[in-house]
Length: 384
Length: 186
Image (tube, rainbow over all chains, first blue to last red; front, side, top):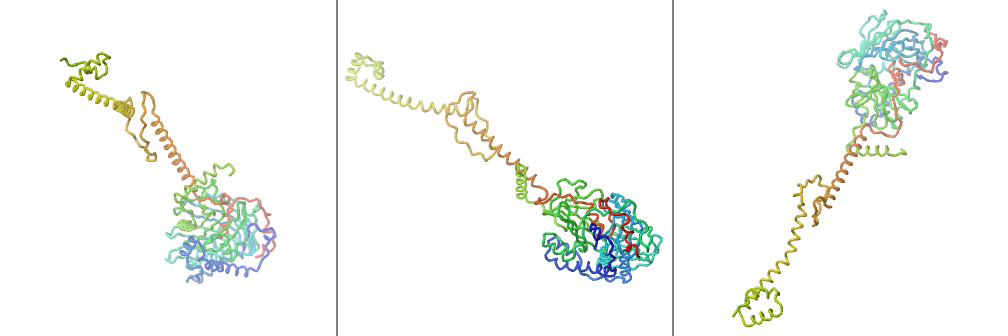
């Protein structure tokens, strides 16, 4: 469970039983995926299309290397249980160029994490950020190695222990994630001593590196982080509360929200959250196959006539808007809902996801004429 | 015996006065030849009178023909721009003077202007409506500019990465982590 804007009292570390928290973290995604699969029949056409291209949601672990699976699970838990600090560099190469984010991280065992973005390449540098994850169920994690994502990784890929190596001048255990055709999808370097992730590389189907994340200058601090950021830390913008439970998320369908259980390229729904904004409620849906992560934000309304900081682009044959400068965020509106997609995924996956979600089809001649006359009449109406 | 001669035609035309007319009638009573000539002259005169009575109608016909063609020559060939306008009725027979516009022609020109204006209005309105009807269907609801920063934070947490966002006004104390006694335990 995580909360970014919870009351001050909730930020205090209540130090829950960590083993129970880890067990809940392991069980929650599976329960969510299973429940979502049961509702696939009532989803929209886009939902059905996406579901067809997704693997079985309740698929068991693939026949992989048990040692590799154990190492990844330990790595996800180590990100919660270990006190550490270090520097994280996240590099992502997309169709519009590279995005590099450099951050300092302080984490206390079982408690909260402080991150401060030092330089962000094409991104705007940010201030220090304090997480409010008090029970370790939804930790920020290190290099994308969290318990829910490890579960999905093992369901969609074959994980293989490769051997030992080195990263950041520390000995590491190397684990590969391979696709069905045997091609390499990702490689992880896990600290031999603590199991903390030290490095991760993600490849597309053409063997191109699309993401390279490293955790440098790692210091294991059993007594807790030695230095907090100077100048204070901040809760990031966005009143995101705790994630919705599976029944809560599924009940949202009855209120007119589109909640596909899966998206193309095997992306499974594994988390969701609701937040209130000045323009209404926003629903966030998180999809992943363990490596690629796509967030779909839905909000009722229409796109503003003029979108500052956005430019038109064509994705999957649809004219939509991309946020400048990195064009990592894509948005459009259809049938009274504004969709915004932010993806850490290969370009072809992003195209397929955008294509699978609803878009307005061009109106016929008479419908367009009727709509145009209605608009012109509204323009001429002085009381409109 | 002397026949009437030239006086016979004068008798038939009624141009003889009383004494000469009596003497002509007395001669006709006794002269069969002159009676026959007088009868032929009267018959010819009736035929001529009949011709002269039909002449005014024919003269009227001629004037109408002239009015149609006009004094400046024949009208230009008619160009029917649109089939929307009905064929105008036959032009009434009316005398036309050089330099004046005929009422029928004026009405046709006016009708053409009306038709042309109506067509232009319909085409222009249709084009404008077609243009205005494009774009996404707008349904009732707020106009939204997606809050990218807020979404990016949520996405970063979803991915298991660190968020990269600008400073917020929701600051907490710098020592939030270190001050928590439990948080410092391994």
